[in-house]
Amino acid sequence: MQREWVIGEPIGDAAGFGRVFRASSADYPDAVAKFVPKMPGAERELLLADGLDGVGNVVPIIESGETQDDWVLIMPRAKKSLLAHIREYGAPLPIEDAVAVLSDVATALANLDGRVVHRDLKPANILLLNSRWCVADFGISRYAEATTAPDTRKLAWTAPYAAPEQWRAERATSATDVYAFGIIAFEMLASHRPFQGPEWHDFREQHLHAAPPALTGHPTALAALVEECLFKAPAARPSAANLLVRLERAVSVTSNSGIAALQEANRAEIARRSATDRAASASRSAAERRADLADAAGRILTRIGDALKDAVMEAAPSAALKVWPSGGWTLTLNEAELEFTLATKTALEPWGGWQPPAFDVVAHAAIGVTIPMDRYGYKGRSHSLWYCDAQEDGRYHWFETAFMLSPFQARTTARVPFARPPGIEAAKAIWNGIAEFQVAWPFTEVHLDDLGEFINRWAGWFAAGAQRALQHPTQIPEQNPQGSWRR
Figure (cartoon, helix red, strand yellow):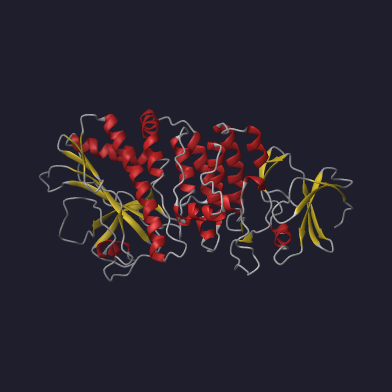
């Protein structure tokens, strides 16, 4: 250390893997010193200090050094921890206050994404410093791409906030911190954690197998975001970089009165369905991990379908609804039909021996508008909905796309464009070479919290069908699909 520090009385209990004391120097009269015993792996936080210098919304390290028995970190003294803030309030935090805290934490996670995985995010490690909530205590953190060493204390995290993959002793990623973020968000909004133990084995069972309770009384988009953070499958959770955008959308008042009414009407249904999430066992196989993703896909798609159905029925209450035994549905208005199928799990190798795409499809569905065949043999259009990692490896979302026959084909189809499940025809379209099938609509992510364009477009096609004005597209593809999926 370059400065001379005066160490004062201890502050609180042991913090993570160390003890915290008041500290002061000539130029830092109000700081804290953290003493971390020199046990195997304990130097981790000291080694991370330089790598985290200047990272926004992360408590900075003023100086570091060592004594005979401890590593020492000097940090600015925070006003209080989030744990103390929650206890002081003694009730659910107002939405505005909770979102302000979560936005600061989300900023830190976005800044850390791809660099450092915290692995022990919790209210005690979130500190109010210079009017911002900052992440601290990187005692069991690891660089995101580092190989886990034997002394990384995999089981030293805090049980109420530990993600399913930690209980399974799997590799922690930024999605692990997003899960803890979801626990913290739930705790602030509901005044209790979603999983309450109380014993270690209880927490393990709950994080691995139990669904979180419904988060009611809050904006639907905010409750949906928290639910998605708590998905058992890491790949189904929002990315750290996406959290800030989602938070802003979650509390903004939409200008579309129909969507606002729809969100309010569906609030109870969304909360009920969020309780159906279950996880596989601690030793689950790759197929079981896909089952987790497929489960998340099904629940997300159900909400998307409900949003579309309710918005259309609100605008056209005379439309006749038919719900299929499978859970899909059809709306009929003046012989035009709007059809929506629910998710079907995709086989592991569905491509019929053709070259598979570079991405993985976990589940699929379809949406379409059908009209009485016109004199040109046209019956409407349909699009595919695929739950896949089409654009970013390992990041799964619902994508809308559609297919067409090559212009060189003599035959035609009654629907243009048309949906296809993952299979040999779709594989030919996605293939790098030339085949009789082509992609007719770019792979477009369907955002659960931003469905305005999706709903308005399909409502418009349905309206055109009901008015006998839906026609074969004047050009196909209607939008350039190239570059919209990973090759």
